[in-house]
Amino acid sequence: MKKVFTLIAVCLLAACSTFGKPVTQAQLDQIQQGVTTKDDLLSSFGKPLTVTKNSDGTQIMSWGYAKVGFAGSSYSNQALSVVLDSSGKVASFTSSDTSTPN
Image (cartoon, one colour):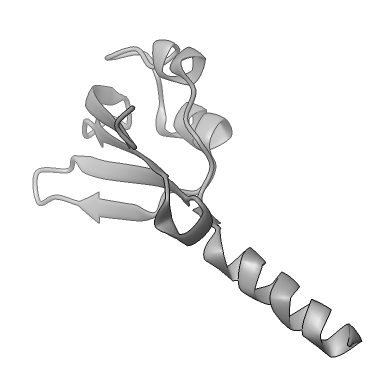
């Protein structure tokens, strides 16, 4: 009987999934073009999922978050991409937030 309960618990946990850390509006509000540095971003958001280095010396750092509810009944996705100029300061950024429609 204990094995049955364990199997059910594992199945329920597997039905819900989270990846990454959510990005708050307060964190986004702290990003300033020409002021915020790569080190500032790493302190705020942690290690990015991807870093792209362009031939002109710019970099693109990207973070993501995803949460899927029980059996896919709900979802929430966030993405943040920041372009750093050749001096390592924010040139621009984009963010997106997608979730289950109400």
